[in-house]
Image (cartoon, rainbow, N blue to C red):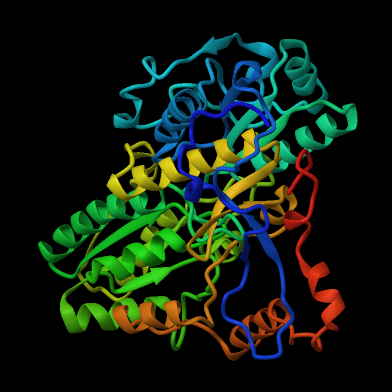
Amino acid sequence: TGTSVLICIRQYFVDEDDTVPQKVVVQKNSRRGVHFRRAGPRQRVNFESDEVKACIVSCGGLCPGLNTVIRELVCGLAHMYNVNNIFGIQNGYKGFYSSNYVAITPKTVNDIHKRGGTVLGTSRGGHDTKKIVDNIQDRGINQVYIIGGDGTQKGAYEIYKEIRKRGLKVAVAGVPKTIDNDIAIIDKSFGFDSAVEEAQRAINSAHVEACSAENGIGLVKLMGRYSGFIAMYATLASRDVDCCLIPESPFYMDGEGGLLQYVERRLKENKHMVIVVAEGAGQDIIAKSIPASDQLDASGNKLLLDIGLWLTHKIKDHFKSKKMEMTIKYIDPTYMIRAIPSNAADNVYCTLLAHSAIHGAMAGYSFTVGMVNGRHAYIPFYRVTSTRNKVKITDRMWARLLSSTNQPSFLRQKDIDEAREADRLTNKPPLPPVANQNVAKAFDQSASASSNGEI
C-alpha cells in the first residue's frame, strides 16, 4: 500500500469512486455526461515514501503564484509524505537535458512565495520528448510535476505517452498555468485574481490621467492573446471603464456605430473616458492597414501587432481631422502584472492545487489538476489542451460588462449570428437517456482508468 504519514483520520480520505461532473447545469433528461476523478488523498498509495524521487519544472511565461506552487509541492511532499528526494529542473523543458538538477528542500523554498517569477527559471519551447524521458529514466525520477500553460500541458501529455510506452513506473502531474485564464475545463487559473487586482492599478492611473485633461482618454492594454478574461474582469471590477475591447468580440472603427463615433460621443458627454483593450483584440483590423507578421515565438504563438499603439494613433488622427482638442495616455502594464507575487486568495488556491497534485501522483495517476465546478479534480491531459477557454459574448457576464460600461456591442448582426451558432455547436442537445445497465459505463476515461495510467 505504500507509506504515508499524512492520514490518521479516516474521513480525510477521498473515496476511489468519487467523481466531479464537468457540467452541473443540465436538463432533466440529460445523460450523465463527463466526470473526472475527485482530487484528494487516497487510503492506498502507489509509492513508498523513501522510493520517491520527484522533480518540478516550470515552463512558459511568468504568472503570479508560480513560486507558491513550487513551495507547496516541495513542502507538501516533505511534510505530508516524508519525501526527501526532490529536485528542481532549471529553465523549463530544456533543463531536463541541458541544465543541472537542483536539490530543493522545504528550507530552501521557505520564503519564495513572497517573490514574483519562478526560482527555477523558465523558458518557451525546448521540448524534446525522447531526450526528456531518457533523462527521467537515467536519473530514476518517478514523479514529474509540470507547471505551465496549454502548450506545456501538451508537452506533459507527450511525456506521459512516452513513459507509458516504455512501461516506466512514473507519475506525471500537470499544474495548469495561464495568466489569461484560457485553460479549458477548469474554473480558473491560479494567478488570475492577482492579475486582475494589479490591472486595477493601471486602470486607476488611466482614469486619473483622463480626468485631469481636457477631453482626456486613458487607454490601457492588458494581457489576453486569445481570451479577454483579464480585460473583462478588470473592467467589471473597476467601474471607471467606458469601453472594453476583447478578442472574442469583433469591433469596427469607422462609420455609424463604430468605435471612433462612440469615443467622440463619450467625450462630449463626460469630457473624459477610459478604454481597456486586450492584446489580442482587433488584430484583423490592424492587419488591413499594417502588413501582418507570420513570425512565431518559441511556443508557436503568432507574434501580435500592438493594438494599443495602433488605437492611440487612430484616435489621435480622428480627432485631428475633426479639429477637436484631446489628450490620450497609453498605459501598457503587461509585464508588471505577470511579475508580481500572488495575493492571499491565489496563495491559498496554489496551495490546494499543489497538494491535490501530490495526492494524485502518490496514488500513481497521471493528469492535469484543476478546480471544476468548485471541486478539485484530476483531468486527462488531452481534455485541457484540445480546446481553449474563451469569453462567450452571448453569455450573461459579457452582458453585465456592456451594462457597466454602457458601450455598444460593436457587433453586426452577422457577428451575433456566428457567435450563437458557435454556442449551439458547443452545447448540442442531450442524447436520449441511456439504459440503466449502461449508466455505470458513462464515466469519462478519467474516472475509470487504471491507477498507473492517465486519468
